[in-house]
Length: 510
Image (tube, rainbow, N blue to C red; front, side):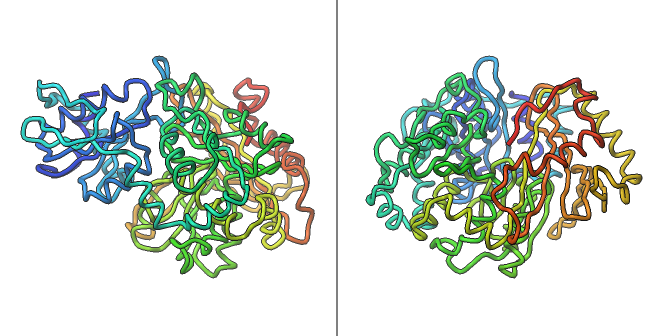
């Protein structure tokens, strides 16, 4: 821990006398790690650290606090949506001034420093108690413990029409938000139940726990199954949502209607003008390469640019900083805008609520009308988790070696139009990122994407993405897995994940 934090300080640039934001998602070891960081910041010459009360700060709230306080940067203590507890995961992320994740060059410099570090600096005095809001002193450094929710909640009031949302709830609208015993719980209770009038009890599992209640804090249909089952039942509220360990991802479910993250991004982009924060319209949209092309259709309709980036929020950051986009998202349930430089789960939920309050329609009606206007991108992600890393890399390397042979081939009646390993030239800083995922496109507009995920800590996760576009004149009500059946069969022939890994099928389908 000390070596890694010192490596960040050593590679991060000139910070003497400046402020550093600290906070995390409350998982096991969170408070102890933050107290170490406070003592190290004092020894290294920071002028001030700003810490969330009890060591808590959601990732988007930390990003906002870095901006608001003009801080040098911040350390976010989290492992995102991965499990916590004594036997779970733990992580630290450095966000730079402006609130965004460290760019690739800085990340490389930090890593290089970890290979040769020979000392760390830390004061011997104990860090102040983090349980009480206030200002403390540690040597020459000031320690400010802040309410983790207040500044973030104030920001949300400038972006959304809270009066309209309150009227929605006063008319009998109901919701269920599952905080998954993670950091979003205090934020959700304060904003949803305390500020916009959601009935008491609308937020469940709201107490952050070191092991997330023994559950996996990933807002997908496997780990948020209780919420999904509720929303598909006869007792379903009007709206359901969830967030993950550090509060930056979101799950959206209407009564009897699950909203895929890619569809959610497209719907939010198409309706963003209904909110005060984006009332003038959006400058552009960005999505990660594996995310479905549903947002592309909206961008064309609005006459704005669409940027396809590698997976990783830092690629959106450069576009946001230059005002080239106003909204962005990833198929892995992350959505955000120019208000902070991180994805933001509660922001996405509030944007949905604002749209529902203005349109006075159900989630199902909004989704159906969207498809009838833009067509439907039938889309699914199949995850093969905790695969032996060597086997996973062999599979991807083998596929890379066959890419040049694929265009022109006809598989199960589908003709391959292109096959490549996605690379990205950043239009702002000119950096190039290669090897970002294998794409196989077909002449009918369908596509298959394969990439390895870097978010797990055991083995490797192989992600298979499948997409088929149905024009607005077509059948928009079919079952997704049924529509994608031919592509699933093609992927089995071209890639053979099960054959290579010995699996019988994916671990998770979303």
